[in-house]
Amino acid sequence: MAYANEYGSGINLTALMIPVQSATVYAAQETSLYLPGLLVPIQEVPAGSASAQVAVMGSATTTTIVNNGAGGTETDPGADFPTNLPSNTKKTIDLDLIASRAVIRDLGGADFNDFGRILGNAIAKTIDTKVSVALGGLTPQEDIVALNLLDEVFKAIGSIRAAGETGALNCVVSATAYAGFMSIIGSSAYAGSETQNAAMRSGFIGMVAGVPVYVSAYLTDANTGLTNTKFAVFSADAMRMAMQGGVKVEFERRAAAVGTDIVASAAFGIEVIDATRGIIVQDAA
Image 1 (cartoon, rainbow, N blue to C red):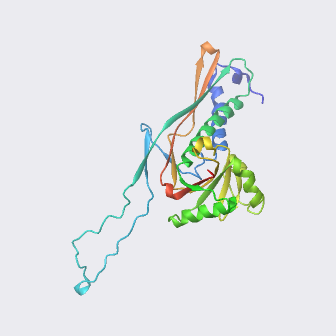
Image 2: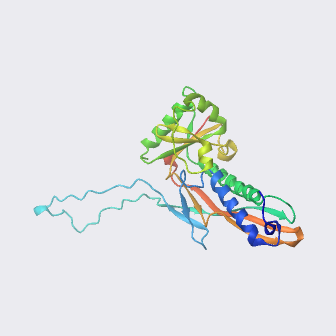
Image 3: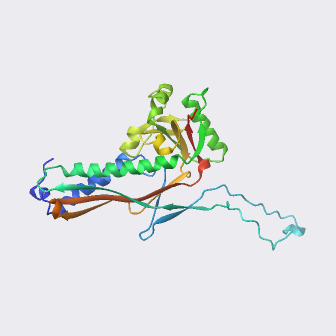
């Protein structure tokens, strides 16, 4: 791509910022399976805070107040009914700073968009890796030899429903289990879904029992801490991400490098909020 003369100058930071910043943020949003916030919701953390408090969406109970006294009055109108909240009502998500840096040399002749894409991809990879680590904290389920992968998905969905989750579910399949999974469901029998970004479009496998299924290169044993990780099924209330201000890009002239520093960063955290609302399947046998 051709640029005007001012884009090739390491001194003109204003001209440099426009293409790099837009390319970085776009790449981070497009190449992350989770940054759009559809699979795992994102809670915004205000400036000045380093953590987020997230409510645990536990199963509360209700109390029926019976009017069975004389004249239709309550038997004990002065008594408070018992609290119905679960004992553990919140989780704390601590933010970590993740950052990537590049140097654009004067007269380097590089496409500034490429620098933005490299930095954005690095941020997206780190976030997807951290989410995969968190997925390892969901309720574990051992792979059963007699069942194929599709039956294992049905079993996981049934277990989550039996635990009381009635909301929408998502499924993420590991790259190592992808071939076996597709050999069972085929490439078109379960097609049909609207997705928000490039990572979700390219990673989308299909719909199984009303659950969107995606493949991720980062759902690995090294990240989950499990053995032969197959897939994870979870609801939006199983985990929560927290961010402060999204992906940021900063620029600074560095004379010693005869160029300009570009730093992409994000304040990000993720925690399992309710492990009963998600299941991760492994084959440890």
